[in-house]
Image (cartoon, rainbow, N blue to C red):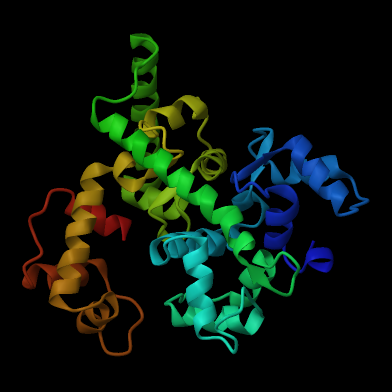
Length: 314
């Protein structure tokens, strides 16, 4: 893929998932390989990627590092710009030709950094987005930004419906089954990892991401050895039907105390780096848990329900 397209991300966006659905079926995957003139064994490639045997693959299974870069860039773009035309217009403004209708690589790199992108990998992102491999036009941006906007609207509507009473359950028995799956899963995580927050950080979410999507969740359950009904378990946690699960849906108390801790750190020290330097011995890269707890207690962060589990999770 890197030899033919330059990166797995470009191959994914242009050949496997041009509609930006987030996942592809086996037949679509085969077609993408065929369109790139891949002459290897497509079935073996698919089976190697589809670890959970769901019959579909997502970019995070395809290339987890590029998935994280693409996820963060999409989220940043949707909060920074008011759509594809606004994005192109603002990125072009600082280029050599402010009146241009497209961006070259240099213009894209300098433009996203100027607008506040700090995630790096600008060359990979440009190569993936540029339709002709040399320039980015408004159509290259709208092809995924429009889908992302629609997805966000659906997510908001789903959450609004959940707030008005939740989705209808097919039967009381199914609702009870979901609840039992969730309770068993939480007990499993506590036994294996010590706390739900630690399980989230170590096994479920990569790079402390605030949410996990269905393919990643299924894969994590398989990796950790969970043998329950993973599809029913997903339905139990994804109650709003948004297609993602957040840490507060797994561990509400842990999420609350973690949010309070983050607020305390920022108000007391200004940043996590400054907090660590203030509490850790000079030049140290680690701090003992007991010393950490004592430092926090001396500064007034004490007595919150779930603190012990939060400390273990950190």
